[in-house]
Image (tube, rainbow, N blue to C red; front, side, top):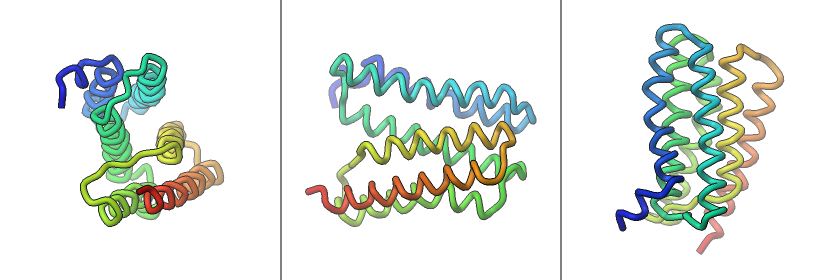
Amino acid sequence: MDIKEIKTIPNLITLVRLMLIPVIIFFLFKGNLNYALILMTIAFLSDELDGYIARKFKQETNLGKILDAAADTTLIFITIFMLYYLKYVSLILLFLITLPRIITFIVIRVYHKNNFFTGIYAKIAATFSYFLLIFILLKLNGLIIYTIIAIVWVLSFLHWSYIKNKK
């Protein structure tokens, strides 16, 4: 790994997103959903921004892809587990939201051992997962939540197929 890979603007934005996680959790724990919502929105927008900058300025790196996926997964997992702990989501929602990412990890390990694979379906699924968390923080319930979960599952199935067929 070259130090230049770490010092790209997109990777620095991703690192900032990782640093937002404990702050988001702090505000959730304190019951300040408004600040958590603002920071979650910033995290979502920074995820979109780092990808755009990486593509636009040809700063895409393997490290960046891994960091981005790790930041997305960590933020989604920790936030949803915290929301479950605080009783904002049920155990069923917790499983429905986290299971696609767990299965993705398993599929990658089974088909590609130590190689990392991401793709457009995974990126879109992450975007919908961010929307899902934002809508939960907005206390929206019902059809919108389950529709987004269904979309994430469909995108995850497409991603798993991509992973299995990628040589």
